[in-house]
Image 1 (spheres, rainbow, N blue to C red):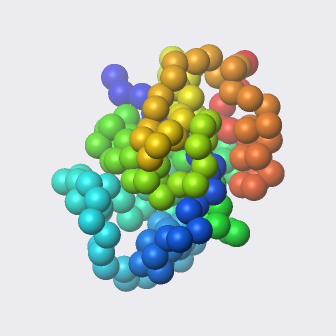
Image 2: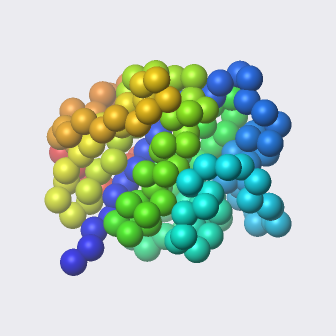
Image 3: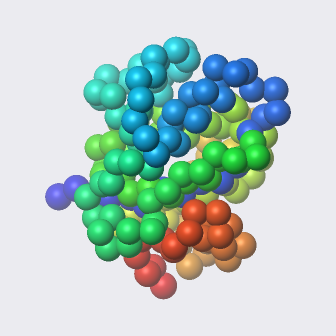
Length: 166
């Protein structure tokens, strides 16, 4: 039996990102669909899992389970900050999600804690850190997610997480 993950991340972006990367981030966080070429060289954009990269954090593609908390799935790109909270099935997370986090670590100006991943079936949590353009996961309890981080997600994205973990 598979599971699903609530994945939430917030980071400031490097101020020197190319227009191509910013256009790509705008596309990824869009609320309306439009044609967009795959132009950046990174495994996230080339992984052989369909075009999942195109919709993984888009605002106009609801995923199964989101009906439990319709305000939870959002992505915002504003003032050089990326913030999102999504619900991903285990196949999508392991085939595409890790590559997304890996790519974001290379363009993030934020170092340290940037988010979390929670297995909604087992209520197991992994805190997500960026350090030296790398992704680091640290096993934790959902109750150990710092309140200021959760408050940032709720303030920027509206709503709350998908499930009560505590």
